Length: 105
Image 1 (tube, rainbow, N blue to C red):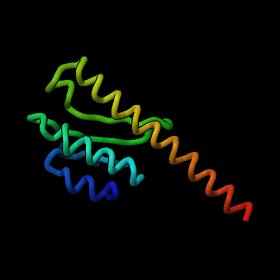
Image 2 (image 1 turned 30 degrees about the horizontal axis):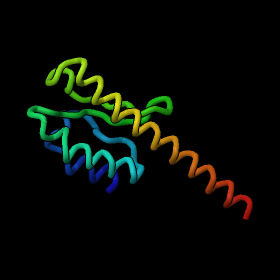
Image 3 (image 1 turned 45 degrees about the vertical axis):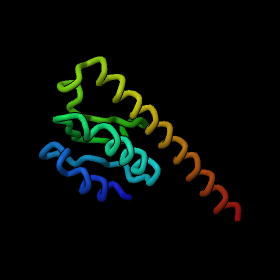
Image 4 (image 1 turned 60 degrees about the vertical axis):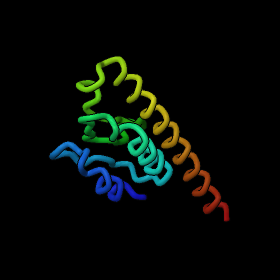
């Protein structure tokens, strides 16, 4: 699934006027699809506005603070951001290795 497909699938949960997921890395999209499907969209009133890379880290913007409170929202969002940031770094390292291999060949 690509980011565009993800945003279409979860369009009912995307805040109006926002672009949604802006990271187009297949394992990340798959992870987010699982997180949304099994948890986030089951929270009444849940919406997201942006999921993007900013300064090499993932930033997730939702309305969880308003729904579940600051502390629980921070735990949920930080955990998702941490995992996606790790996946982005791993992807970047993998792509660098592939490029080095290509140059060496």
